[in-house]
Image (cartoon, rainbow, N blue to C red; front, side, top):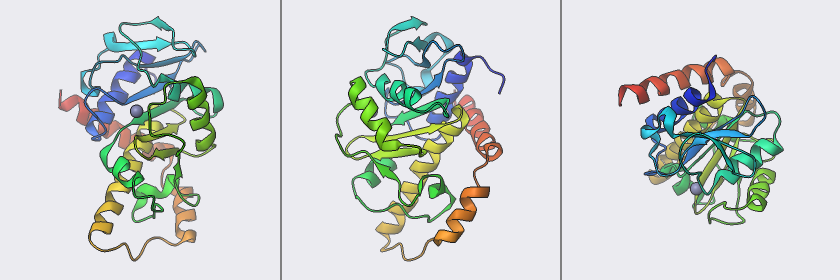
Length: 231
Ligand SMILES: [Zn+2]
């Protein structure tokens, strides 16, 4: 995706809104600055669907606003810590998505009831349980990054979830997939189940072939178009 960082961050927030990840003005995606200055993300105080190029900021690793209009989100530490800890990723997402937050409260293993859970099961999705409070310090951000390790994301009981990816399409799609996986299991649980899900071998096969960067990009493109159509 040959896009400048500002437009890429606008698209990511439109996509997250289209995926139903918004919590009023909270939740955000971030993109590693290609020139190594820090990270690009949305300004505080705006909903995901309200993000325009003027409402995108470049933050240094310590949260200093280097470029763009507006204030930083308190929880920028999530993105800064993950981008420090994971040279293999280029983008991060933190949201308070409803199904993920509800499912996190159950303390039940996430099962592969559909394709959606597959990127997170090795064998279960990570949960960051140290606090459900705001990730408002670099130290808490580092602890969260340590919990996530080399996985694609985690649930935070009492708070929400975090996902990562090689780029914004992957990080945003991981957020959409994790929330959908949680919603499907909540539905199955409410109906008295689940009683059946993909066995480990099938999950391993799916992990290899299902969510390629091409597939993630295709899903993301749809979410961006959906977000743009709703504006
Ligand atoms: Zn939060």
